[in-house]
Image (cartoon, rainbow, N blue to C red):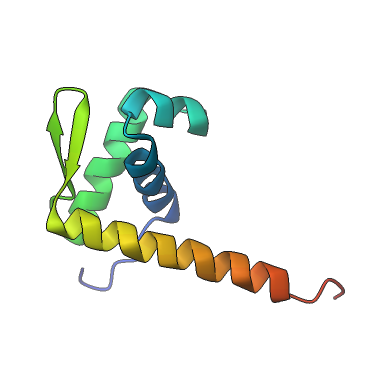
Length: 91
């Protein structure tokens, strides 16, 4: 990954795609185009240097790297939500 910083929007797109199992539905949910979803996944794969999913027509199958990333994305979301519930409400 060579000092690269992951693009959080690409990670959000990936996580939602895994959960919705549809490029079209993911695009609708995020308010972007289906080609933009594909581009997010391609860029994430380039950033990580790993293939994350295999497309079988309209279906997707996660690779081992994709399964690992998805687990980490779930963990990050859980940690973020935990942080937000504990964050002081006043500045």
